[in-house]
Amino acid sequence: MPNVYTQLRAEQVADRLGISLSTFNRLIKAEESFPKPIKYSSRWVAWFECEVNDWILRKAADQRGVEPAELLNHLRDLAPQPEQRPEHFNQAGAA
Image (tube, rainbow, N blue to C red; front, top):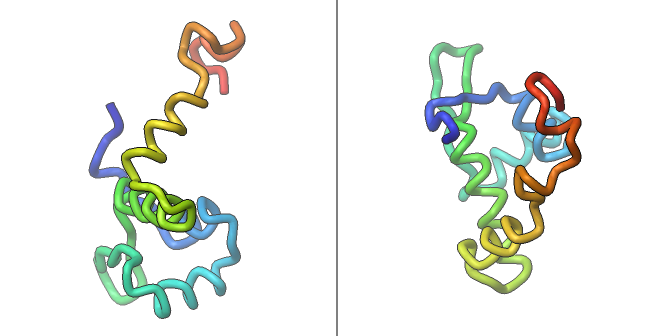
């Protein structure tokens, strides 16, 4: 089970979204629905990974005209199950 406390720094969120850090900074100012960061100090902020993932899912579902749960089920159906993965994926430490 994923750790719900996992946090991402701005660079990691931008990388996850496939955008530059400057584009990410513009996005968080313009996109009111984007999760709010946790401010630890004036220079140290982070986002909960699960909230970022949820925002991505909701955004993709909205663009496809489906409910997030429906899209999530579809994506789970597409993802290979552990027993379907090539053997090198089942080895400890393998990518």
